Length: 269
Ligand code: AHN
Ligand code: ZN
Image (tube, rainbow, N blue to C red):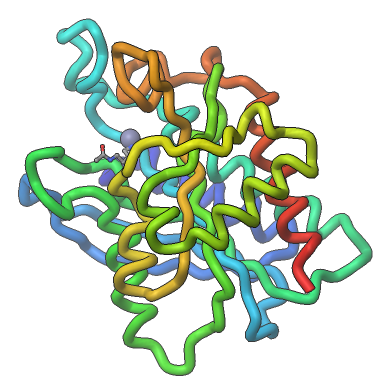
């Protein structure tokens, strides 16, 4: 964040959603990082069928962590993360869904808002509420807005492109939105991806879906991988390292998540 590269990336995301026929808006704010840094934040929303009241929320963060502080080599701890997985992957799946929705001559009976949250990854585990600053801001603004869209539910995508990923059922998702968890894992099974979506509990993760549930009052789940046997991190071997790059992305993981979401969206009535 606070770099020309970040600004260019945001402009690219806006232009891609516009290319796919979505109505795009930007929600800019200066948010305060846990270390006092003023963060130039921009939540980007792309709307499919913006005229419909009944809506589905799909979301993912698009910012990248400025410090690879989980890298095995301490010399890399001040190096930014490229964030192919922890940043780009969720946006990539949302862009492909937007492209497919536009390509289909058939319209869904619901609207979809694709929300790209900023300022997720400038966090510190020792400081409460220091993660997910963009989602906190978005949720506060939504809770104050009148009228507000009627979101049936939300689905957050976080690190949905890694090699060897398995999407266990996350704890806060089960606490706030167990019906959505059931629906999505069932859809994964119908679409043929049950090997990626085990019907077992994973970790409980403070992520963008927490303020969406608690402040915006939208039942929202988190599709996030869990690696029970990975020593480096339960989020996988490249998490917050300089190796979170394209060479460690698996397109079959992206496909499993994207096709599952298509199954979910196309079974809305
Ligand atoms: C915690 O580590 C508590 N939350 C991590 C949220 C996160 C960071 N997702 C991606 N990067
Ligand atoms: Zn991260």
